[in-house]
Image 1 (cartoon, rainbow, N blue to C red):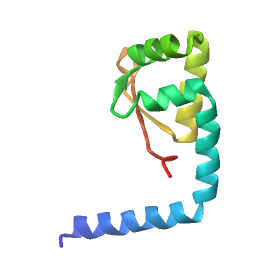
Image 2 (image 1 turned 135 degrees about the vertical axis):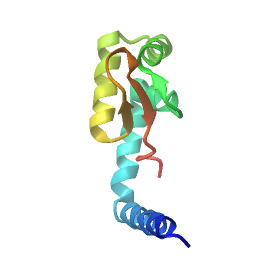
Image 3 (image 1 turned 45 degrees about the horizontal axis):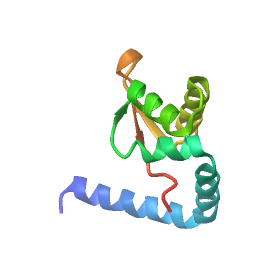
Image 4 (image 1 turned 90 degrees about the vertical axis):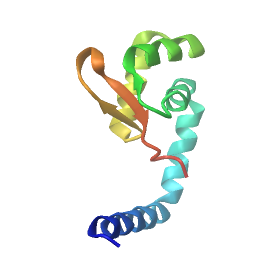
Length: 102
């Protein structure tokens, strides 16, 4: 086993232990996100990196919500750690972090 593999194994264990310790909180948070159709649609649509513009359009169409509402939910999901963000300007994209998949 290489040093990198050993480190990855230890980090995976640490993540698993942390999830066990906060499983109930993560499950509550996930239920809360699932109850909001906009958040639910954003997380569903971001299994892979998804460009900001098409993501907003898809979510607005699916949920019949305004662009400002969709933007607020995206920002909220990023701040909660549920959504990862990369890029800047017109090259921003998002991906579900998997944090609340319990």
